[in-house]
Image (cartoon, rainbow, N blue to C red; front, side):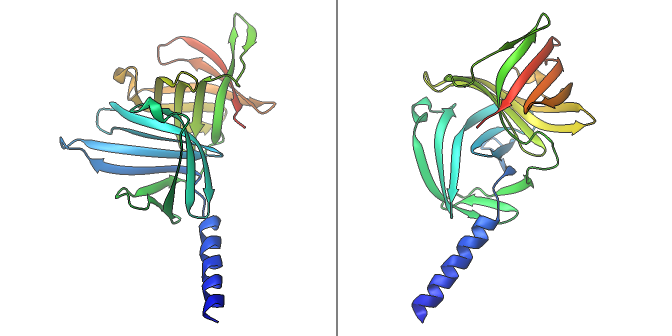
Length: 236
């Protein structure tokens, strides 16, 4: 009878964990050794994730890593595609236990507790996307998304981050992110961190967007004020 009850409790726990979803954005706010206010933002899209730490006051970039993820019960397994602190980790697979509720996420044995920001809504572009083309002089120029050199953008319901990296050379080229909205065909990014140029932090960039044949067409002015027309494809 005791074994039967244990099995029932185990099954109930597994169902409870699986009923909750890690999809969306999570944040851990904390104070640095120098007294500065820091934020670690974790975004989960289908199959892909990124975590980034930055100075919440200045937007100064500190660290980012990410790649693929899979959750089996309470065991999270990740394969690293980029890591700004240790490129030797690229290609490595790690597994760890998590504690998940509707509003909190914590790695077992880690003091950091992440609080849910959103569950993948209300933004219309939630997911992991790869840069797959540009329009130049009126003509579309497509690129192969199956190469090691990638520009990926991960969006939850309210937060975005782009990352440029190469899984073959383990090189990290840059990243930026913050919050976003999608309203009446307008996609607006509010930049909270930018690894290449902190002076761009605080800017809001508005673009036109539309979904055509499952591709995200994105046009407007870049953070440098240059016209862009980009095409992004959902990452499989």
